[in-house]
Image (cartoon, rainbow, N blue to C red; front, top):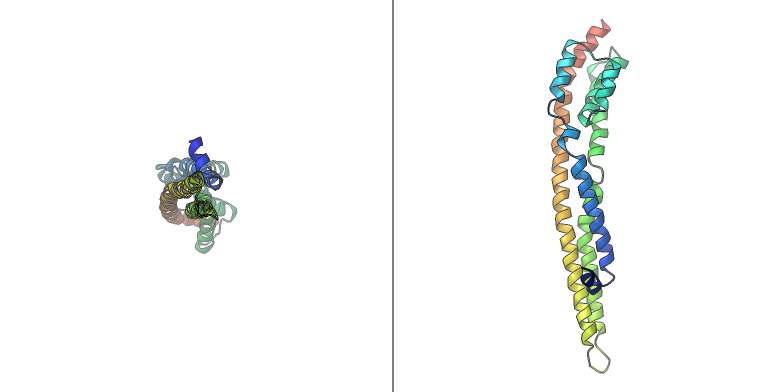
Length: 210
């Protein structure tokens, strides 16, 4: 590997940095976007069952908020009812929407950086190819002779950087698309959970207001 890096020349170092960053972001997102941390399968049913009887107390809502991303969204609606017992449907929906925006922003963390790496890696590889071609043409001596070692080095720089750029960009793009699809799926699940909890909270708000 070290000999390949030497043959690829100095343009390979930005590509190596991109590869390390891309791998770090991919691992971080794989751990952070697990379903258990975002939308636990039984959480919504438990919250609906609990809210059907009575509105939970502040301590229970606080634990729910710290449980998961879905818990944060559902707890936002509950806290709004606890703070404002006569809250109407419009303000309650707004509370859910605000919490949902924060949750989606958290889910999309680092995705723009991963997408940028997927876009920039082929360009960096192309830059290395251009550098290699410059060295290749520079191997031509004024007298018409050539320097075989310099020609070989120029070809190595051109080909290795192109290959490294594509090798980084392809998996980065695939994982970026995968994470975007997962975030969209989680967003839909959070919206549906808020819609299911909304009528129960409105009923509890009406009962508390009365």
